[in-house]
Image 1 (tube, rainbow, N blue to C red):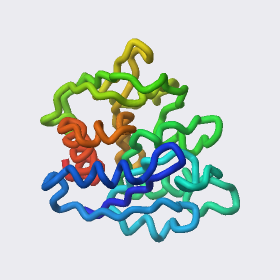
Image 2 (cartoon, rainbow, N blue to C red):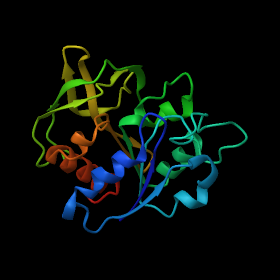
Image 3 (cartoon, rainbow, N blue to C red):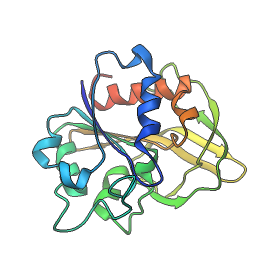
Length: 219
């Protein structure tokens, strides 16, 4: 399986993801990973089709050193519309943590894929992640709690099949993991993942690996 991680912005550095993935050990056996941060200047429709699954783990910022928007009309070659074509052809995408902090009003074509509207998050706090449905993504995953950014979402797509909820006194109860189908493609949305502590959590690791295999059509 070939997986492209599109990650890294001013608030979500690539280093967290790299160090986190280093802790997965043999869970990633058989998965070849590539990383892109400067997505605006690297990605093309032809480039992304070399991968079975794309993981987006960045907000709408060019890079950790540049807060300018990643999506820019007439400049960015791969936007929501192009990712939609990629999905409809039968590929998979995982929208991970920072990928869900883009509002639908700013990028409607992107919202049409990940299917949620980001409201905000309280200050970092202990967040309980609770499995609410048994499926291919939650296989071997138990409830866990980590200090994290508790993402608050609204307008979650009506076709979202929710399997994970997040809970905290500050943020209430939120959808934290769900799947969707777009054409022949598979979409998984997962909101935890701001801190390295989350990435090194055994249950988060199982969840993400399951999501990769499911998005690639291997589950």
